[in-house]
Image 1 (cartoon, rainbow, N blue to C red):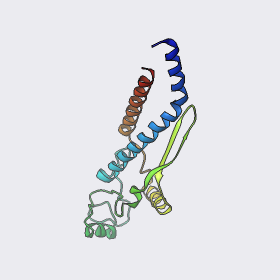
Image 2 (cartoon, rainbow, N blue to C red):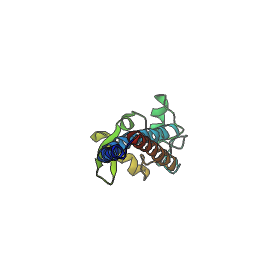
Image 3 (cartoon, one colour):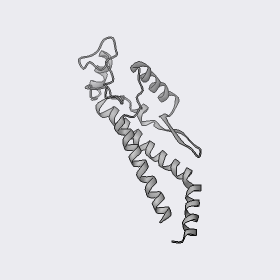
Image 4 (cartoon, one colour):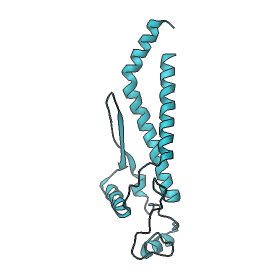
Length: 161
C-alpha cells in the first residue's frame, strides 16, 4: 500500500469514526442491558450483588414478597425465592434505548423503560428498593469495554489494511 492510499484510508476512517462508534455503543448497550435484565430475573441481585426485595412490612414465608403478592405469585406459578420483577414482565420487556447522542469526543446511549406506565413502575421499584435496577456491575462493564475495544480494533484494522 502506498503512503497516499494509507493517508486517504486514515482520513476516511476519521470522518466515519463517530458514526461507527455510535453503532458499536448502541449494539453493546443493548447487549449489556440484556445481561442486566438476565441478572435481575434469574438471581434477583443489584450491581453490588445485593438481593432485591424484603422491604414489605409483612413478608410471606419467602422473606422477599409481601404476603398477598407472594400468594398471587405462587398461585400463578411464579417463583418466590428472589425478587425478579417479572409478574407481568411488561416493565422489563419494555426496556430499550431511549436516546443516543454523539459528538467527536463521546457517545452516550440512554436506556430505560419505554411507556409511561412502565417508567412509573420502574421508578416505583427504584424508590421502593432505594437503588437502581438497571445499573451494570463490574463484570458487565468489563465485558462492554472488551467487546467495544475488539470491535473498534477490527474496524480500524479492516479500514487500514
